[in-house]
Image 1 (cartoon, helix red, strand yellow):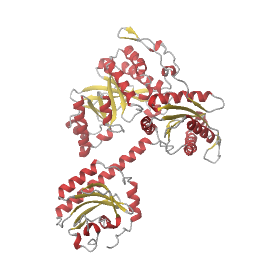
Image 2 (cartoon, rainbow, N blue to C red; image 1 turned 180 degrees about the vertical axis):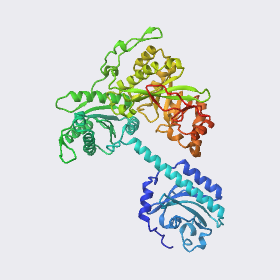
Image 3 (spheres, rainbow, N blue to C red; image 1 turned 30 degrees about the horizontal axis):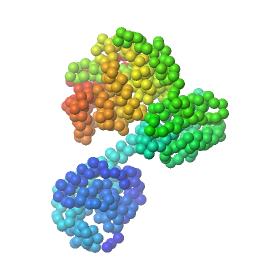
Image 4 (cartoon, one colour; image 1 turned 120 degrees about the horizontal axis):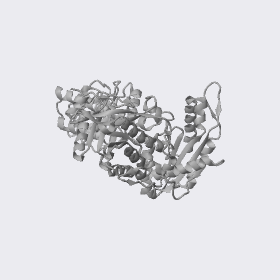
Length: 608
């Protein structure tokens, strides 16, 4: 048997194939559907989506074959990828001298017919093939060749889409400055580590860290110097952790570590000591002056039995230990040892009359941090319109700087220690400002975003909101609270408690950016929101995308079954609107109807 050929551009071809990160992945429905269709369409017992690696042909999807891969030397695909622009069709393999002695032809299973269409990337490099095979010779018509080539385009489109999704996930879960895990990835890792530790009855260790004096670097040397410090901190800490640990930058100068593998107190304190030691040398800033900046780190450690804790309480304990570490003159780390958080009484002035009776002040550690607005900010409002009634269904409150600057102007100033006060201030500010703009008499709902991780005790943390609504004379059943699908959902049980509290007071519960995060349909199954806002990425160009229309049609069917109101958000074109309206959506939000207005209710435009 002749030695199989190697393409002249093999190095580039393999580099492209490996960049897609698809080899040795689990089966995926879009590829399995394609091979089933191909087997039925061409009436062949075998259909394959095959990718040619350096020494093997690996099957991403297979029908009629048990093997997961073949040696490259005997793979028919090795010949198909030599000419990426052409199909390889062998109507009788036994009559072709290249394949007559191939063990797949001369022995079991006795393959006699092969047709393969190369899977070409954007540069024309052949990654593999979609192929159909049979155990008897057969003719393959021009029409069949065209259909097989069309299927190769479909498979390559699925590979490209899969790759884009991986890239987007990477971007969404990685801190752009340091390359570390960001908050979303960290929360996912913490949830997974807790689950694994519970199954094996192990402990779990969480370390909360921030830098001492970092604000002074930003203030005196500028944000470029601050960025350089953060990158160097990440560079120094990474070598101290194990491969099973997760290091993340949560925002600003806040870092955290999950210790995997059932870490104990001894291992956690040893790691803290290594990190403190690694941070002792001053940080040398880039630039001509080579300025040195001393930078210390404070670390709070919580080590708990995974069966007796959850993510929220673990975070709170690590934070409490961090605050104590920052007050210590010498030792820069502290281990949480208390059995319960310090209890401080909430000022009664924060709570008003509700339902004709006085709410009693309750004990809540978080409230001890205060509800004072941590920094100045304001709100813009964007309408959500009902097309059937041609009216404003709701106004969404959107954070802005005091001069109308974008949301990021305010959001980048939120730290873990200020997020509770920020979240509470957002609710109060939105209600008070919307009240002055006439929300009560408008009949519209007011939609407010909230941070799940900032609601430590839902029954208590909602009280300032209730009091603000009462002062504004805004009925509670006119409030909508939105949580983003990919947002800070540390524990599903905790979010469920928040939703239950909102439901108890008659408020509507919404999931924002549905279809953009990692939780997906599980959120609908677990929480049964009143509203979902379908993400702009899923709706963009939906008029030109049959797959998007199919997905949205399925989501709307689920919404009807569960009694959930769907809102199409981010709609910008008439074509998008008309397609979505034809699919049955009545509630819309987006630039097509009105842009957000700073401290005002904009008048929407209704398309004909």
